[in-house]
Length: 265
Ligand code: MF3
Ligand code: CO
Ligand code: CO
Image (tube, rainbow, N blue to C red; front, top):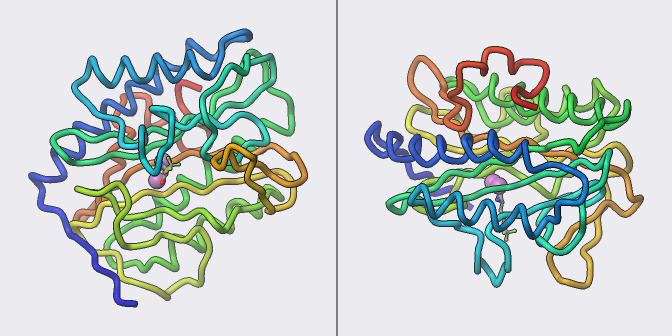
């Protein structure tokens, strides 16, 4: 099937940039909430309120009936975690995935946080998953191809002995939260669709410590690793220009520290 890629103008990207700044700000604020005893429903309520205050609309709430404003995926939950009454505890790792719209233009980002302390395995996973996303971003430059991005992501995950969940892919994003192209997190260098200026898409590898096999819980949403192993995910929205690629969800002054390890972690 031919992909239908909507290239964006600088003006359109400027609106998406505004949307992305809100997502980044939200993540900076969420860190303080990641405390033992806080429920994922409380985190969801905070996000909902934050979006409202910033004039943004959650693109997830009500999407195919999704009940939360954001997805909150704890520990072995891989993705699409439904906010509920679960109380966070020390050593949990919590991925919050936020998709919002401003004036119809979307931004998508995910961040993995730790609650209280972090053990060695979780630390390895978080490093692998942050660096994999960064490696993918590094390869997201005009002149490369989609396969270069996927290759860069997968190679970094393997370096840490972690695994990629291949069912999850990045995606173009614009007036719709999911657009072409599909951005796989594995691939062969030099293959696939060319990366060209005006593309805006996400890089969002879901990485796990154990086997890359999942199942869906009875709620019809929550996806967990079959073996119960931890999973983490950092998602960024990037915009490709002729001579540079901008990470729209990472604009803060501390971003330069962000190569090996997530900032404001
Ligand atoms: N934000 C997710 C993504 O990165 C999409 C979640 S769709 C939902 O593409 F249905 F789970 F909400
Ligand atoms: Co996404
Ligand atoms: Co997302």
